[in-house]
Amino acid sequence: MEVEIIERSDNRMRFLLSGVTPAMANALRRVLISEIPKMAIDELIIYENTSALYDEQIALRMALIPIKADIRVYYFPEECRCGGKGCSLCQVIFTLDEVGPKTVYSGDLKSSDPEVKIVSPKIPIVKLKEGQRIRLEAIARLGTGKKHAKWQCAVACGYKNLPRISVSQECNLCERCIEACPRGVLRESGGKIELFNPADCTMCKLCVDSCEREALKLEFDESKFVFQFESDGSMKTDEMVVEAVNILKDKVEELTKILEGL
Ligand code: SF4
Ligand code: SF4
Ligand SMILES: [Zn+2]
Image (cartoon, rainbow, N blue to C red; front, side, top):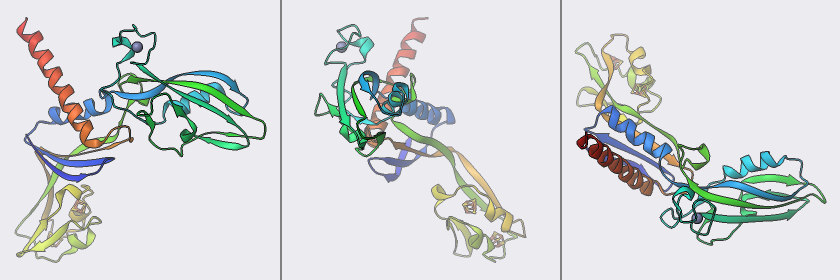
């Protein structure tokens, strides 16, 4: 397996994965979206809510606020020594006490652990009119996307086979295909039409349709994948890949043990 980074930032990653089967690429995608632990608000204790929103609507909004935490410091509630009752090893408490008139934002939440932070402080939770108040405690716990989407840190996660073109002898270098390409990834080089940036090709086939001589064919490489995903901000993308690969490795080892025991 080979990995070549195409684009990398804390919130977005795109890489070329070579020498793997579609099953392997899909396994990585599934682990990224459903198995990486993440902290999310899981329970609310509402003392006062005189806003226009029901308690349930506020709970739904708050559950989807991305939270940044070191996942190695906390336990899943079901694996914690407290037996899931709730303690400082398996939960973080955010408090909120605001009076209108104002818009209450995610940044108004105060964390019981300074190392566990709200990723974006400008997510609106509720708008309070004069005299309205919201006072609550929000309990955040570790979970995975397999259980609920609020614990999913990878978004827009997917892959496609690496496109390639073949051009027959019928080509007269009219360059219509180059003009038709909306991504600007075709060029003429050394008397040939070339796909010089295949990772950016969307496989729209406009180049194929524009060729009156039917000289151009669009194909794809079955062992190469352009893989991409984004982070909701709760974890850096490179940490997510490392975490996903480790989880995948553990799963393979577990399966191997089971098969050996048969
Ligand atoms: S449109 Fe067809 S004939 Fe014209 S340059 Fe492209 S491949 Fe060649
Ligand atoms: S398939 Fe679309 S994006 Fe890809 S080379 Fe052809 S025109 Fe450009
Ligand atoms: Zn606990």
